Amino acid sequence: MRNVMGLFLVLVLANPAMGQSDYGEYGGATFIAVKDTKTIIVDLPEYPALIGERIAVRINGISTPSLKGKCKKETQLAVKAKKFMTEAFQDAELIDLENIKRGIYFQLVADVLINDENFVIRLVEKGFAVKTSKKRKAQNWCKKVPTSKGK
View 1 (cartoon, one colour):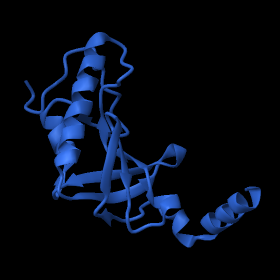
View 2 (spheres, helix red, strand yellow; view 1 turned 120 degrees about the vertical axis):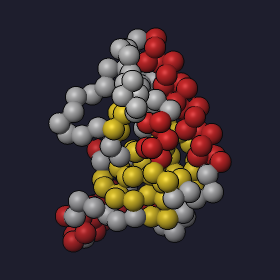
View 3 (cartoon, rainbow, N blue to C red; view 1 turned 30 degrees about the horizontal axis):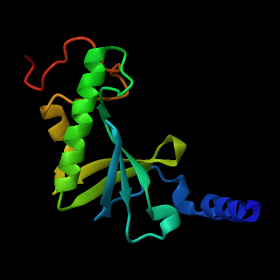
């Protein structure tokens, strides 16, 4: 097993693409499950099972309520968000990943599109997410959540 892992690390580290921050896009992911309010599990059918099955994909650029929230309001909102996400991905005809990057814990971070629409738009419209940036502090879901219309 140690030899296999060593070979894997040599191949990964020797790959010139590993130095790139963007791994491109992938069309036609297969939905498996919603892990939490910002992470889905997918299969990537065009890749071997080792790297293409049950891959965690964190949705890029959002802050969402946590299932282990700091207050009851946050936890309840997270449960609703997870249900909404599960239904949306189960009903999706096409799931694409764009602007793929590598996150911590070997997960992918990507813009996730359902039927050619960025899923972040749906999450923000429903009040289940806010867009984030490096300059913006994390959302406090226990306070009143700002709507996308500024009300």
